[in-house]
Image 1 (cartoon, rainbow over the protein chains, first blue to last red):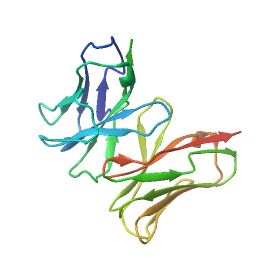
Image 2: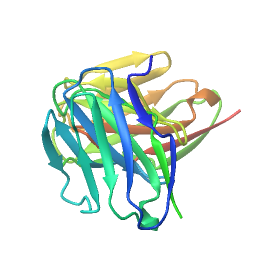
Image 3: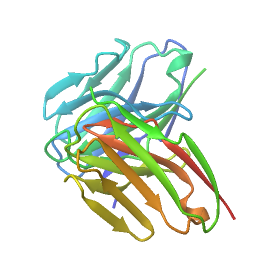
Image 4: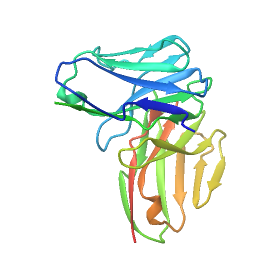
Length: 113
Length: 105
């Protein structure tokens, strides 16, 4: 049974055209994360939510925003995608604390044309 | 923020050989995770270590966290092609630089 679901698995958007990636979880975990992973690199943490509390990494560009309307869903909005934003975007959850074991979704591969 | 350095960056081994991947932290680790990732896929949890000196094994993979809790190692015994992938250590939401493992049949 899928526990962390990401839709779509593949997303193509045009340069400058806003795009939203979605993540949902059936685990009822408090913490949700968004990562960006470029080819041959480790996942880079963009931000995370502890419940409704949003925590942005210092080096996350302003172009990236997130929403968490309820416990189950979290969205990644890219306001004006550039070619450099093409990457795999991974969503993860953990139960209570940031240091807890993370459960990952399969990722959404974003292509910017 | 947490900084995790992995070595080596990549590894190519013959099937059946043993190998070790290291993860060094800039801070004391209170929980260290090892993950495996196949190209283009999500991360698969392997093991979690929390106590200094702790060692855990699963099938042919053993992970240790040193006493000072700033370094961890992942050891694979008798490697198989199915072990190929990228190995990542993680702590507090941050990931290490990754180690790409290729196992030649």
